[in-house]
Image 1 (cartoon, rainbow, N blue to C red):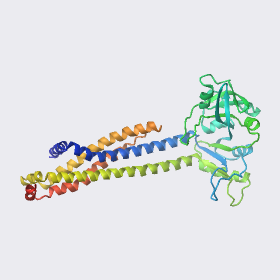
Image 2: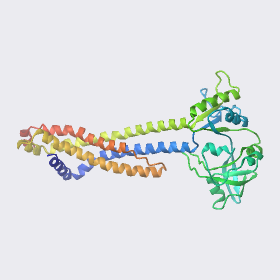
Image 3: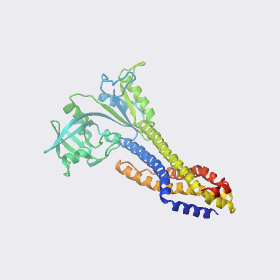
Image 4: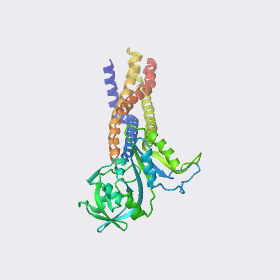
Length: 403
């Protein structure tokens, strides 16, 4: 019985191919839009999380007066950190794996006839440990080189490509500003971040060399810290804030003139934000499914009107109301499920294309695909029921007299 009803539905759909195709279009667009929005949103979440994770595992960053305060504006009068501050953190805070003071200055890098503006970063050997970074060629500058303040450097992969090219960079000399540096290593590539910067576009030198020969002072712009595996970064952050307040003489209710950023907190916050936005976009896209459902109901109403005499004939020769209702209901469901399948294929294809164009992971969520498909079927049942009920309740006599 159900199979015969399905075959009748297929026959009626094929009789009006163009009308059926236009009716299905709303469902196709709705299902595809939901899948695209959710898939690309999940890909964006994965990309942001991955990019922040590349900055270093279990990492915390301490900056001087970099955040906006409740009073408004950026603190510009806060004193810079010193090397002793980093040493105190390493010595007095429990649960820390490594600490690296960081000072940065943009300079022009020159090699033979090639030059490139880049950031010169002064730090210690622990910089790579905190950032979870490896050396791809050569080696990191040694402790003796760092203590002596020698003019040695480790290149980011982008600087190596743009300045030195395909030559072996180890042992070459590049000029940073007016100072000549010997290249001792090249870092592995980490690529573009989601925040607009390129992580490989910098040169790392010993911080003592940076202070003596580039900055002309002993200021430290920031301090980066990595917590040991299994240690809560929230606990480390709280201890660091307490220690730095003591070191910097901040008492009572006075505001901090520094900021400690927990990368895990940032990951969690951004992940929650992108997930909310993804859900919102998915909900907006789902509205088009409702619009498609209204289109299904409208066309089924038209179909009932056009086939009034046919319905009257079926009822007159003994067809039951539930059989007529089932016929029109199956037609509506077949239309929506067919549209749902096309929408799934279109949505997955466009999602893969979008992920490629935006350079983000293609994160397939089978639950979303199944939900969109079954929702399209539910749209067919809900919006197809009312026209089907109207057809089933027609008076056979009046239906046969209908012109």
